[in-house]
Amino acid sequence: MTLDNLPLFPLPLVLFPGAAVPLHIFEPRYRQLIADCREKESRFGIVRLPEGIAEIEIARGTVGCIAEIVNTEKLPDGRSNIVVRGAERFAFVSFVSSPHPYHVCNAVLLEDEFEIGAELDALAERVRDVFRRVGRAARTLADDPDPLPELPDDAASLSFAIASMIDIGLEARQELLSSPSPAARLRELEKILSAALGAIVTRAQVHTLAKSNGRGAHVEQ
Image (cartoon, rainbow, N blue to C red; front, side, top):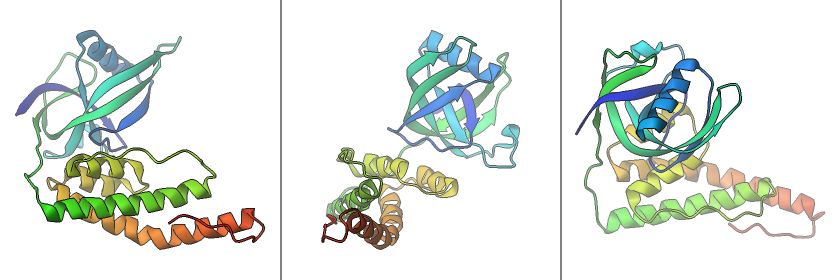
């Protein structure tokens, strides 16, 4: 499906489907973009802008994510704080001429490859498990008693949810966003999380032991 005349907001971040991201809107052209979207109850696209690349140099085929405005706080000086939630992914095709001060583009909506089966289900369960173990250790290190967030059931949504919550570089985030395969995304996340697991659990154990003055406190793994 094609998207014609999609308002485009290039940013140094990657938005994933289902993820909520706060944005501070201060440039006049993007104030206008947000005002137009709110007035028309429409959406806009967020695409990652790599460092050193001009906005007009965004490459054809670059994958971005549709943003839906879910909350807006307008400030007295015209700036605003908003929260957007990621929806569908799209591939950038080209900029189009527009009377607006912000970029407008044509794009194509992207869909995942169709993947089902016991192997995918088992992979998703392994990724859930290692994410929870890493998450519990991270909560321990931060002295944060809050429970971990609920995770989606389906593999595709699960991969995007976990990718949005872990601390990885923008290149890695962009690769995950661009992948059309839920299984491939989950395999990459399993590799990333498994590599971090041992070290973060050990740090959490040391942290807990230090807080207990060596009295044998235990960190759940």
